[in-house]
Image 1 (tube, one colour):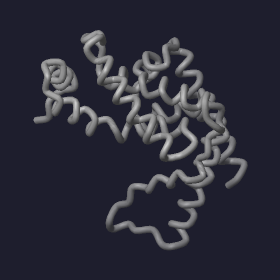
Image 2 (cartoon, one colour):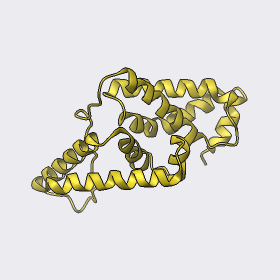
Image 3 (cartoon, rainbow, N blue to C red):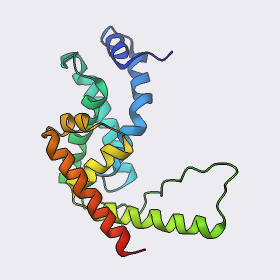
Image 4 (spheres, one colour):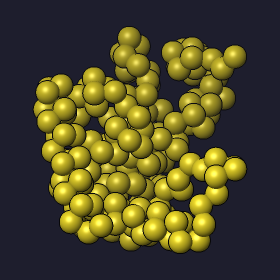
Length: 182
């Protein structure tokens, strides 16, 4: 059975650096996907992800132990990404690979269906790119990191209803963009 985040944090604070390595392995994909939505390219997203883990490592002894690790780490990553965006150029999602659709082995789509799906995902990536940063952030947190509304509100330091409204509006804009280019 995998140790809980709280247990890994306690072990890290007790001097076991391997425990923090396990937290890094556990949360790098999620954190990277979130910060990638804010950064201009992969290299910047990787640097932001590394910086977020470094800041978490340095801040762990001073952190409140009653807070869950995952939202705390994501808040650090969001803050590092915001700082990077302020210093950098506009975002570019052109090099984001489209998400592969889940496929059941016996129901393989033909070449035409695969091409349509690829085009749909490319349109979706462009639609996400066109969203304002606040909307991109809630989309990434909800669908890339699978965070709850409460976790998102805590990370963004916003009221719960503001998070819900932003996500609702972001999805409306994405729906309109997808429907206008069938």
